[in-house]
Image 1 (cartoon, rainbow, N blue to C red):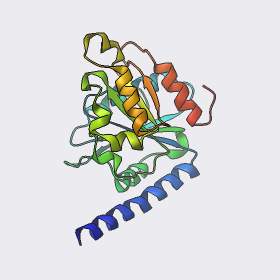
Image 2 (cartoon, rainbow, N blue to C red):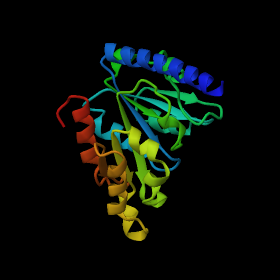
Image 3 (cartoon, one colour):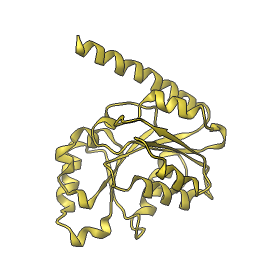
Amino acid sequence: MEIKVLKNILSANDEIAERNRALLDKNNVFAVNIMASPGAGKTSLILETIRRLKDKIRIGVIEGDITSSVDAEKVGKEGVPVVQINTGGGCHLDANMIQNALGNMTLEDIDLLLIENVGNLVCPAEFAIGDHKKVLVSSTPEGHDKPFKYPLMFHTVDAVLLNKIDLKPYLDFDLEIFSQAVKGINEKVEVIPISCTSGQGIERWLSWLLIQMGRKP
C-alpha cells in the first residue's frame, strides 16, 4: 500500500511538471535546475552567470531554500527578477512549488530561468519540476568520491560543474578518478571544472549553456 501511495504522489508531481514545462515553452523561457550539496557554490554560479550574461539575455531566478531569503537578496541586487521559495523544512523543490513561483513571474520578460534547488544530493534528483536541463554543482572540498555515494544525482543531470577547482592543489582530490566515476554513471554528461572565485572555466560553462538554449556562444 505504501508503494501505491508513493507512485500516486510522483505521478501527480510529474503531471504538474509537464504543465510547467509547457508554460515555459509557450513563453520561450529556457529553465535550468541547479542542484548541489550545501556550500558547493550554486548561488555563486548563478551570480557569475547573471553578471556575464545579463547584457545579452534576460534572466530570472527562482531561489529554493528551507527558511531563509539570504541568497535571493544577493541575486536581487544584480537587478534581475527573483522569487523565493521556502520549503519549510522540505529537502527539495517540487513541481507544485515551481508552478506557484511561475505565477509570480512575468515570463514574457525572461529568456533564461535559473532555478536554485535546495542543497541536497538525494531528493532533488527524484522530483521533476518542469525544467529543460539539470545541472549539478559539485566541488573539490567535497572529495572525488561523491559520484560513488550519490549515483542517482549524477545519472540524472546533463552537466556536472566541478567548482572550486582553484583549491585542488591544496586538497586530496583526484580529477581523473572523479571524471571516470561520473562517466561510468552517465557517459553523456559533460564535466566542466570551474572556479567562481578565479573565473576559471566559467566561459566554457556559459558556452555550454547558450548552446543548450539554441544560441551562439
